[in-house]
Length: 482
Image (cartoon, rainbow, N blue to C red; front, side, top):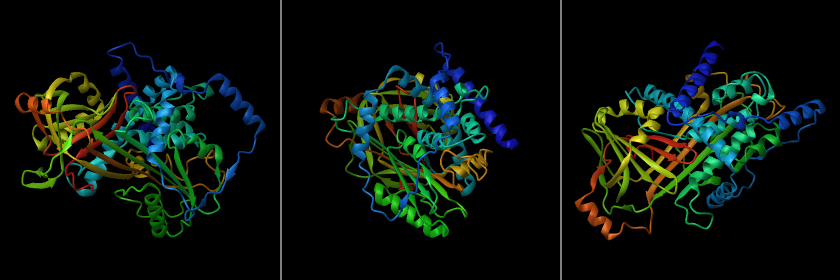
């Protein structure tokens, strides 16, 4: 357990360092208390523990049971309605959880890149897309279902060290998941339910259990803020390949999303699999799809033909001559933006990536200034998938969700967690029906700075009100992840 403890301590120290960085511009006090159990909640918990009521349980329906497809527009409308009701404390919680999730995202992106590099034998990743919010939400979901010592370990890994065992210094999992709902809603909200959606963000969780395992209703219902579509299903897990095939077929039928790297097998002896699937679709206002495909240079000697988006406007931009890269911020809504980072020399991508996907990215944003730009970039349809169990093992935390984990709030049965899959479908396309005005095209032709992403680059989706980085990604070849 020594390596795990070292990893947890490193996480805490790095998070506190990140907080001190944020405090450089203003007086900053961690509102951790807003995420803790209140005194009244602790009193209720103590009363409940004394009375020892039996929590209601249920057996998930078989995986072959008829299920309606996910309605993504309805999921978005739910987020918008929830966001309209946010109070001041809700927004503070969202900012705090956003910061913690950002840090975890940076750390796990590095781990994922190293894993991909090791698997491919290459010097850098072959392309990646990661959702820090989905990653954080998955682990927060397990925290909701955990008892000590696993609960304390998960709390520390989430970024909130408990000073003691007092109830009022413990995270309230419901508050954390509600904050994640607020973060998601702040991203997609564009003027209310009736507005045309330029941004869609859908989160679906599949809970797959061995036959006979009963899940606790409070746990499953508690996941709703993070994932409004939670699908508990049971199936025979004794045949790993057949079980994986059934799960993949079920998730695709329900979501309609074709994911990269689906589940390829089930760990022997598993009784619970936790799959989080996230779909993001962003339509870029004022951008159009060029009629002819353009060349994208994967390296100095290899190019591929890709569909390209182009638009002219006033965007935030910054060039760093010292580190030889440029950064462009493209608005995607009232508070959401696409961040694009391109090295001056494609061979510098690994070095720039190491700088960017650390807290440096948040610092760089302060250097941006308005600039008239004609921006050209590939239309993106990226897929990524990873097993959190593998990433945790590489982060020196192999037992956090292992058979040793204490997860008595999920089930009283023989619970053995297998794969914990996070899958992402990320789409970026032109906003059909909104074309750049003729005047903008004329200005672009004579005065605009040309920024063309025709070689490997990095990207992120940032939401200003919560400070959350919803996606981190690297594009080496726009066709390789399709």
